[in-house]
Image (cartoon, rainbow, N blue to C red; front, side, top):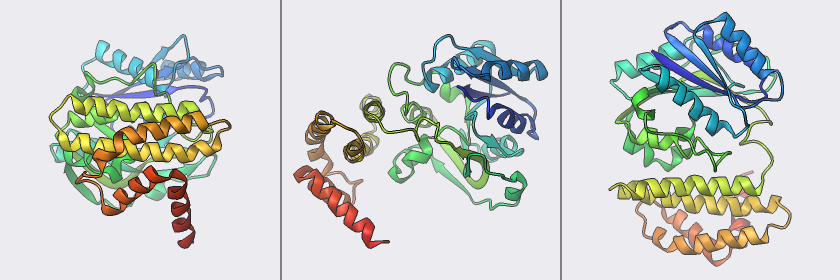
Length: 330
């Protein structure tokens, strides 16, 4: 049995398209958990309408809006409370999927004796007319990687942190939950790595079978704020705390490198905020505390170490150099 968690918040515009694509799968042995996060539009009514149409759909209505992390936890708790699923996957309600998504993910996982299977996604503009059949004959470049090796790949950190387009063995999520009181904007990044760490083998295919709708209303694409900055830092600290409790020195090293990169990124983004001097000073202090150890990291290139040194000397100089390099590639 495959259980699918779909958090819902003010998504009346997207629910029908998402669920039509999910229920049209070539594999039918699955159930869906729609978790409404106290929507103020007609989302909950639409969820209940679909549940009345298809008995595989379960609806959970949360009394207070607390973010997608809480909604996903409610879905996981419902799944493990009522079922013994073999596999778990997550889908964003504003996205939609190819009718062979589950079939291919399940085949990849079984055929490669893997714990996680993962296909590629295609970005689709909101309201864009798009034909799913156009991707039917896409490439199938398949690679198998050990979970630890994936987690050491900082260049894949963003895509492996994303939940969608993946099928997990259910046991990987048995003891993993999303942060609830912090990290509303980056809850996936603060939890997905823990499920991947519990895995052994991951198989990845280049098939584009998941369609990620680029909406300005999504959390990560919304206007920058101090809360976004603090959530990004929380996500990094969550990794540091987790790996500090293991004997994985290399993973802890890479997590610290990612922490410094996030600090530098957030410092630059602070320019979008009014009155951000205190926040910038806080970021500089965090950088000062952590940067020295990174200069000896075997997972950083000489160029990355130079970036760290320049930022430590002058954050503004580092930004000017980055701007010059970007201009030179235009």
